[in-house]
Structures are given as C-alpha cells and as structure tokens.
Image 1: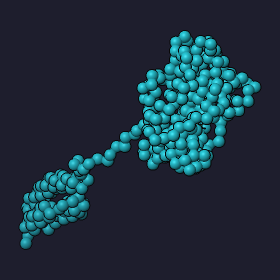
Image 2 (image 1 turned 135 degrees about the vertical axis):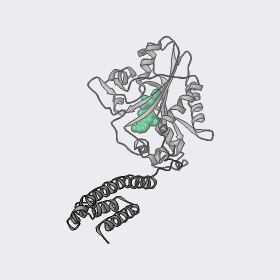
Image 3 (image 1 turned 60 degrees about the horizontal axis):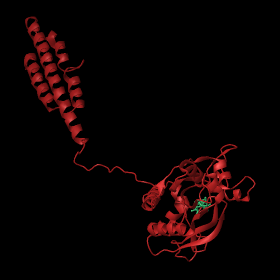
Length: 342
Ligand code: FA5
C-alpha cells in the first residue's frame, strides 16, 4: 500500500474512532493519538521525504486538508459529547418537583399567653377591662402607697430586685391599683391588670423568680366581700370547669382589709398531697381582699363613700392546676417537647 493509500486509511480509521467517543477523556485520548504533537496524522508529514519529489506537494496538501477536516469534526464531536454529558448530569441531579416539601413548623402562642387570654375572656364577660401598668415601678407605688411603709415588716413578703434607690421591678401587679384609681377618679372602676412580676426568691417546682399575675380591682359604691367571693367563684368555675373546689382562708395583706387567700383543690394529686401543693391537697392561686381605706385614699377615693375589692392570682400556678403540670420551671425552660403539648 502506498503512502497515499495508507494516509486515506488513517483518515477513515480516525473518523470512525471519533464517532465512537462517548466522553471527554476518550476525546482527549483521540486528539492526542491523531492530532497531538506526536499524533499519527501529524507525523505523516515526516514520510514526505520517502515520496518522489513531484508527489510531495500533493501529499503535504492532503495531510493538511485531513488535519483541518479532523480538527473540525473533532470540535463538533466535543460539542455533542459535552451536551450528552450535561444531559446525563442533569438527569442524575434532577429535582423532583412532584415530591412533597418538608413541612414548615409554625409556631403557636405560649401556654402563658394562652392562659392570659383565657383569663381576659372570662373577666371581659364579667365587665372587666384590661389596664396595663409598668414592669419597672416606683418603690412608692409598689410599697408605700399600698400601705407598706419602709419600716413595715410586710416588705419582707416580697424579696425585691432593685433598679436604683427609688425604682424596682414590681414584685406584684398591685401598684397598678393606685395608677388606675388616680387616672379614673371619680368614676367606678372594674379592671384587670395583667403583667409580669419579679421576685428575688428561690426557684422551685412551684415558684419562679419571674411570673405573671392578673390583678383585679373593682371600686364603686356598696361593694362588699360577697361580690369579691362571687366574682372569684365565677372565675374558677369558668376557668377550671365544674366539679372543682375553691376555698377561701383569711389572710393578711397590708393593702386589703379584710384579706383572704384563695386555694383550689390540687388537680395533680387529687387532694392527696404532693410537692406542688406542699402536701396539703390545696394550691394557693390568689391573694385578695377588700381595698384598704388607706389605699382608696391614696388613689383619690373617699373610703367613707367608696369601697372596693382586689384580687391577685398568678397565671402559671392556675395553669399548672388546669393542665396538671407538676413543675413551674417548665414554662420558661424553652423545651419544645413541653411547649408543643399546648
Ligand atoms: C400578692 O402578690 C398580692 N399582691 C395579691 C393581692 C392582690 C392580694 C390584691 C390582695 C389584693 P402573693 O404574694 O400571695 O400576693 O401572690 C399572689 C399569687 O401570685 C400567688 O397566689 C401565686 O399564684 C402567684 N405567685 C406568687 N409568687 C410566685 C412565684 N414565685 N412563682 C409563681 N407564682 C407566684
């Protein structure tokens, strides 16, 4: 076979092999085999010397033409192989838009907020409006105007976080009584004052150092203890549902006279006694009483003409009773396993 024939044969073989290439590495191998610096087609020019002088230009031109042709066909092949590779890649990593997505977790109201709203609803039905008072309170409002002067031992009932010499984090919602009375005088009052209270005290299963109270205050003409007990009995019936026991004990608060403590039968132990009810079968849910004449006066109301009652339940403790929660620390422990149950 002469050099011209073997050159044509090389062309056909190279084209056939190029058609077989399926990926980039096969293409690279093909390119270096035929068109690389030491490729079979490139090296054809070295055989020129073996040809008769008159055939050499024709052979040289033919080698160049084949090189150009193969280079052009190679470029086309590169394009189509890349396309095919890309298509395979896309198919492998394709997103299945028909798959259902991961569900987004929606939050919900904290149990304390739910309980607060439930309490607002109940008192709204009895004609009480919501009145808001500040968390950072003047010592004067938190104590003095509530008939607790600096020397009074009752201050020991409320271990206090002080902000400075005159201001503190309110230890109870009762200072709001003075604010609302001073604002509303001489109108009759029927409000609840919800909010957070702060006490510098030991955290236990039943006591937190931050907790909510919902103060209640009614001021009017001829308001009596019967109205107070009736209101609290109605509240407990609506909050806990029928079939629960409420009891009232006499107690002492400097800002009410007479004063009472309101207890519910302990739902957790069914009255048997447990650590939450301090083994008594009863859990204290509110302090209450008839507004003390000094407090009425400090609020601007003449005690000879006006009378009133006040009460101050917590929020977490009544919720613990209602939902059988045996540790108050769960409320603010941020454990979703707890929070998601409500
Ligand atoms: C008071 O704070 C009075 N101001 C209540 C009051 C208002 C009496 C109006 C008379 C008239 P006491 O310290 O008992 O009272 O708290 C009232 C309620 O707040 C308790 O019954 C309880 O439900 C809740 N409470 C008190 N301390 C804590 C605490 N550390 N953690 C959780 N709840 C608490």
